[in-house]
Image (cartoon, rainbow, N blue to C red; front, side, top):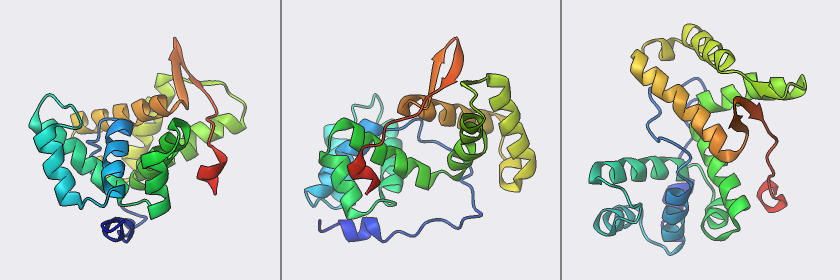
Length: 193
């Protein structure tokens, strides 16, 4: 992978930092998989951007949406190793989805903390669900505790919270059936190694 050295060597953000807004929208699994496939074919990221715009490989309604998705995919893929990019690009759906989720986890500290502080704790305590009011309370508490989050406009913060919940639904950790129920997800052995 000629361009993968640029992808793999990207440093993680400082542990104390938070992104000011989450604009990725969701897991972007299909888009990340397409981008990873092009990387495996040794396409530099700049060429991928040109192909994405010219051929509309993300099938976006607007060019601005396609560019936004591309930038988010590029940012997430920079956290993955060559082997992880190969798994994302050419592995079975479960393995590829697990790698895509791993990239999102590495890129979004607030999502990692949400899972660690709220969802995993509820699994340990053997609760089977989580309410919207508990999620709202958690995020309001985070907004007070974390100075970087307290500066967000209310609409930006609300959107970020919705994105985090949507990603956990897309990966299958939370499922909506009247209430939000929690589910363990299957991570294939080859992804764990």
